[in-house]
Image (tube, rainbow, N blue to C red; front, side, top):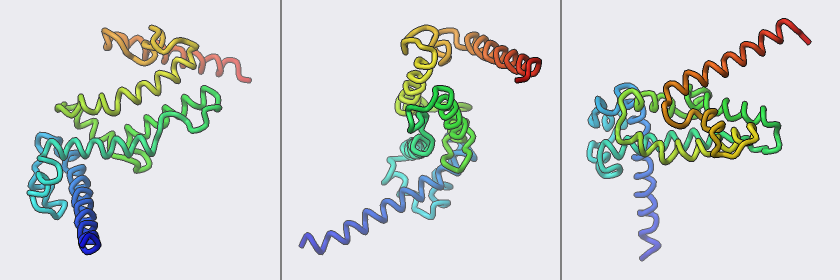
Length: 200
């Protein structure tokens, strides 16, 4: 009896996976185009070629679908562009460049790895309850990875004030951000000027 029902259950599972994938793909497009609040589940279902009831069945509604979309693309971005270089013995500067490249790739969606950058721009422009979930699930763990690398480069403990400044953490974020960008930009410009005036 079990052997006769197994293929049927596998087929049902495969169909369910296909339906979920189609809805996530369609919802991604609609959420990027319209944002969460303006997006209509009818449009998502139609674009996915699915019944409207499939959204409630698989995701418990629009909010659940939105979270599934964000998680899907967040996980895809992390898998495709990890912050830490696989070779931990690389020089610190190369590992920092690796992390920066990964971050820029995620934000700009370069290489077609993920659309999390476009989705996050929509979310930040008009935040929903999903923002807190994203910070807890993706933001904080990724920040901790980068914090460790920054602390190593600075030769500091991971919770020292110097590391917090480099990570743009703490109170009075706007003013700290202005000072941080100004200091780094000035140091970079002076280094370029010195290089120009004293070529090797």
